[in-house]
Amino acid sequence: MKHLLSAQDLTQNDIIALLDMADHMAEINTRPVPKVPALRGKTVVSVFFEDSTRTRLSFETAAKRLSADTMTFSASTSSLNKGESLRDTIETLSAMRVDAFVVRHKSSGVPLQITEWTDASVINAGDGWHQHPTQALTDAFTITRSFGTPHTLEGRTIAIVGDVLHSRVARSNIAVLTKLGAKVVLVGPSTLIPIQAQQWPVEILHSLDEVVAEVDVVYMLRMQRERMETAFVPSLGEYTARFGLTPDRVSRMLAHALVMHPGPMNRGIDMVVDPAQVSGSRILQQVTNGIPVRMAVLFTLLGSGGSTALATGADL
Amino acid sequence: MSSAGSLGGAVVLTSQDISRAITRIAHEILERNRGVDDVVLVGMQRGGVWIADAIKAALERVEPGVSVGAGSIDVSMYRDDIGIRPIVPAAATDITVDLSGRTVVLVDDVLYTGRTVRAALEALNDYGRPRAVQLAVLVDRGHRELPIRPDYVGKNIPTHFDDEVAVDESGVVITLAKHTKENAS
Image 1: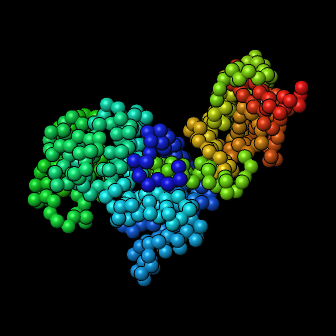
Image 2: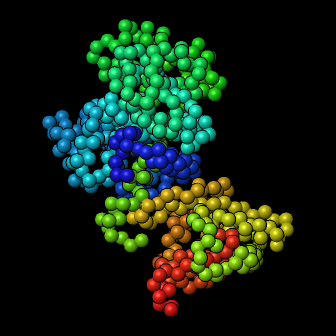
Image 3: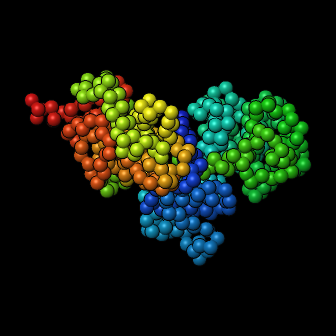
């Protein structure tokens, strides 16, 4: 595996192998010295054209725990402001001999485009409405480890609730969770469910109350108001009344059911309850698990042999 | 890893030979360290773990009443061939004691180039500063590429560098590489 661009490119075996390796990385994170020299000498650059707190810091922490060097490119303080193109920016960074780009961009397909301009590995850290594969792997890791079934989600039903239309997290999660055998139900107003969803391997519902008492995981999405140019819902109040996670809905969930959210939360809109008060909440666990999962991705792309071996011709 | 008995090579140690060697190594550890009060056995994942357990059992058998610390270590993230060949982490490291001031006996099944031991020495650093590190191996097959030598050896077995050595509880089997066989005949 050279790049990680889309969760759809991953086979079931790829997913299982990455999650197993993440277990190993999680153990490293519990050690007195949570750092191993595995990627010493490798350079990982995060190239974020869109705001991020957890994904960028999670990738940087993951790279550092594997002893890779990290660089951060932030669009707002770069020569992009002088009119440098995306291509020139990537080629400039490539010329500094980086081994991996971690890319976030508001346009779908930018990470794929970047693979044509560099020999380095490219990891998609979120492109537009399209994909966010490491978030989906983190969520699959969180769910499988919570339920104690590391290699399968057979027999589990996961409701993904809210603004599916603008959500790369939803698209990546559908790919990963269904490959592990889970049944996915999309729940949201029809204006926020993409028309193509009818071809996806999911069930579509327009009422959270219909499923909240039956599913194993309630996965809340954020209303992405920054991506909305027109009104998709009559009012936020009405949206919350029908699709928000309220204390009443939490009380009707199955005893073992989990509440998840990729963050950042819109408190009072998609999350009306305080997650700290919900025993099934795994929202902070999702953040914690992001680090070992991203370590597993970085190690798989940069550390498991292949191109470097050919380049150096080293003896085994 | 396939079972040592199923490869169809030459059996160089039987299960009985292995248990005798382990008992002898246990005695040597006791003699050299004058007891095992500060000794911690650390098996290298995966092949060394069962041998470390067997040495622990032998120590506790010959020295009734003692309890020997034991753990395991996975060195895949410390190897010097990362990026050169595929590396899959074995099983997790399990070291719950602080190694500072203790005598660590690293245990592995086969000592070959010495690179795995080098990686293990680096990995041990993350768990404290042992007073001393000793090395016990069931088989020393030669071909060292680093200045590393074992303190306790089950058996020295000269091999060609690309012969296959397989070890498990049922025995140690050597399958000769094709050209070694041709030279021998």
